[in-house]
Image 1 (cartoon, rainbow, N blue to C red):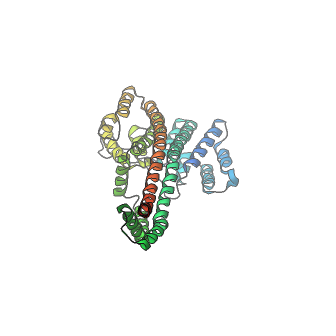
Image 2 (cartoon, rainbow, N blue to C red):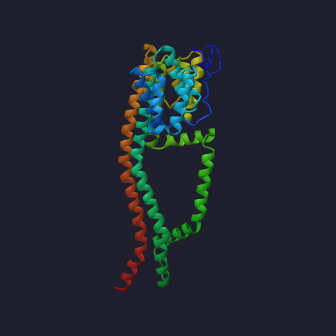
Image 3 (tube, rainbow, N blue to C red):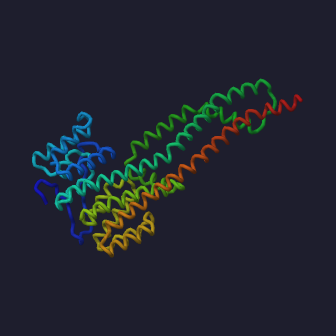
Length: 373
């Protein structure tokens, strides 16, 4: 290991506990995915072109006038390298990089493949951004329609229905059951709206404060996976990230147990983190990766079959790369299905609710008109 590089603790296979990996520094905030994609892409291209790393970092940091948190962090990395540190150690001082990234770069330095690792990291974040964009594109229009529908219903219950209710009270007489129900719902809504907003605000603050607790992460992930269509899509998103990360680490000659430990640290999804913790223990006990993964329903038969073949052929990085592509394509397909399904469903529901409210308001008028005739 090069001088100045932080050691990664290792354990012998006979040790009962899982491999321990370095924790992310607490000195800085993580960079946005877009910033990391640009950084890795530009740095790998410049290094491949023969530019020395300090000059490359200065050029990258000089973009946009050199202002901003990311540019300052890049200059800090350059100064650390001038002082004699390696790139992997210099990135550890900014706090903007995950152990997964820093360890990948460290392996690239030790094997003389820094450029290849940087290009792979750039591709990793490119795919991650693409997945996010696909989900945003699929859900943005239905979300706008849903917000518009909710706003229209609130407006009708808050302003339109009370106007009709006042008119009906002047005429007297018995109102249709549907009209009475809508008027009562409007009165309840107007009476308890402040309390409802207060409860929702309190719940939102509570969820935000508890977002990193185990019970909430477990409950929210279970709820997400149980959702029809959306749950399967979310699972594919995290499977794509998992396979992409394992492919990169294994191709960089990172030991499998350490690769699983690093991916567990950056998974960001409780079921994957929980399962990989058990997988680490199984690998240290001498079990195969596919055998350990098969204990969890989260991993489908396709993944288990290809992992088994990859272990037998000693080409896990190749098969994880193929699985990452498969899950990415699946996310793209499911995203388009979600968009095409949700749009008409929301529009139909909006039309039905608005139609019921209008019908309830006009029914008494129709009855009065019939009585007059």
